[in-house]
Structure formats: structure tokens, C-alpha cells
Length: 458
Image (cartoon, rainbow, N blue to C red; front, side):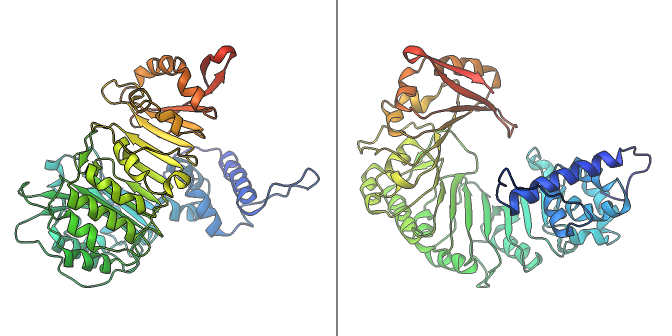
């Protein structure tokens, strides 16, 4: 990102016209109801539009479109700068040039940076060790208005002390921090009682040195941690394995505004692990602490001990979104509220014996995500008799594929699954998603005579 490139040939009128048209559409959809046929449709121009609104609209466009808009003329270039610098990604390859052209010369454009990502998913452990932006506070402090720091793919912070160093380096109005923590024997306690009231989202991925260490969070530390972040809306913990002190953490913490909770494994497997009775009952306590606010739960790698399922019958959870295996779904389904509140389900493979507890119909559920693992075709429907009957109002089935080349096999399988479509009479769409693609391939369901089913690509 820098000054406008020379020699770039653009159709100025075309680019400005495209943004202006998009602007009119966004203003109409955002601020005005659908007009009646007799209503005369107005127009909007860039000159008469507040810069703040243009900025918000530009943020919805791809970076290439923002850049093209900025290259049309000097005024539009100035308008595009906040959007161009809104999110910055620094990697081993991009860091030297960005440092030279922005950080080292104290570029005024750094004030526009709101989101900073360090590293990338393909960064190896060896590469991550070559740089440590988090340990060098002089770099972080050059972003005075930073609100989000994503360092999950950067060198890990060194225990709680390393986390505290980063928290104290970031601007006081920071909203979100994502990062990994490498554990050391000499750093086992959270070292502060400071309150970071601005934070709304915290994502921590724990790694162990050595790997035999346990999750070093005792009851008093858990209470302190929730006191340090009293306004968290979203909390994600990624652990290397089930830990002996997890129960103490779940019992001890209470985040008054928590709406989303993720508890996963660092090295994710497709088979969930069972928590022991102590951790299972602690999870129930955690849910009871957050009944009034928790609406999204991701526990893809965990389920509870069979003897603890009865505890969840009195749970007041009103989840809207859930990611879990079938066993965990059946457990949470014992809650009197879940069948009428759950709207979206991410259902993963389940290696556990099916619980004897009946899963009631999930009448509010309209969207189910499921995954292909090792060639298992639509396992949640093929492997669990009667599960489709629990989804009377299912509208969309989204299937995540490891290999896009097996899409046709899925289509043939689904077209032969007459019982599925008989039980899910409102099912209208099937979407196939491949790795690395946000947009999937959409198929509509065509119901024919005598119950025949065809999937038609849209």
C-alpha cells in the first residue's frame, strides 16, 4: 500500500459509476424500506455522500475494487485510504517492505489500521520462530487505533506473562485479541488483577513445553481471568488435550455478557472425546452461569460422560447455533429450551455409542452443516436412524467436502434417500462446500411424481 501507481490505465467514469451505483443500492437497502410502485426513486451522488458512509461501503468491497476506486482521482484516493489500510496482513514476505514504507517513516496512514493479522495459516513453526512482532512493542505501538489483533499464526506468546505484555502494548480501546500461548514451567499463574474492559473477543490457543504439562488454571485464577475481561462477548479456548484443571476453570469463571463459547482441540480430530464426570458436571455449571446470554456454542471435540447427561435436563440454555457431535447434541437436547431455540447445527462425526436419552424434535432448526470424513457419505443421516425425523422444518443442508470430486457421489446418494426428503418435507436447498472456498455450489431440490428426487444446480 502506498501512493498511486504510475502508468495505471483505468476507465475513471466506469469505476466511479460502479461505486456510485453500489452506493445507491446500499443506501436504499440500509436506510429506506422497499418503495411502493408509485414512489419516485431518488438518486445519490458521491459528492453529496458523507465520507463515513463511503468508508463503510468500501469496506464491503474486495481490496482490488477499493484500490481501483482510489486510483481514479486524488479525491477518491483520499477517500479510499481508510478502507485500504483498515486491515493489514504482515507475513515474513510482506513485513520488510511494509516496515520500510510505513513503520520506519511513521506513515500517517498507520492511523487508519483497525485490524492487524500477523502470519498466515501456511506459516511453519520454523518460520514463526524467525520473527516476533509481539515481543517487540515498538512495532505494535505504531498502530495507535488498532482494534483487532489476530496473531494465531504468529510465534506464540510466552505464558501468561507474554499475554500480559501484549495486552499492555495494545491500545486501550482494543476489542479483540487472538493468539497462541506457549507454556513454560516457570509461568503458571496469571500475573495481574488489571481489568481490560474494552475487550469483546478473546481467542487463546495453548501449546505445551513440554507437552506433558496440564492446563495451568486453578479456581482462583479462573475467577481472576473472568474478572480481567468482564465484557467479553466471545471466548475461544483451544487446548492440546483434555486437562485435569479444566473443571476448575469451568466452575470458576463467569463472563456476564458472554454470547459465544468455543472449546476445541489445537490439533483437531473428527472424533470427539469424552470429558470425565467432574469436567462434565463443571460444564453444566458453566452453562448455568451463562444461561441468559450464551447463544452460540462450539464443542466439536468434546462430549460428556454418560452418567452426567441427567444434569443437563434442568439447563436453561437457549442456544441458537451449535457445533457438536450427535452424542453432545442429544445431551444438550435434554434441556427444555433447546428444541425450540436451536436454528443452526454443525453436526460432526460421533464415535460414541448412542445415548439412550431421546432427542426431541428440533422444530426451530432450519440449517444443518455436515462433513465428509474419509469418504463417509452424509453420515449423520445414514448412520443415525430416525435423526431426519427430528428435523421437521429443515430448509438447508450444507455439506462440507474434503474432496470436491466426490460431489456427484453425494448427489446420487441424496437422490436415492427418499426417506430423508419424506421426513424433511421443507428441505429445499443442498449446498456443497470445498476446502478453501467460502462460496459453495447450490442445488435446489426438485420433487417429482411418486416421491422421486432430483438435485438441480442453481
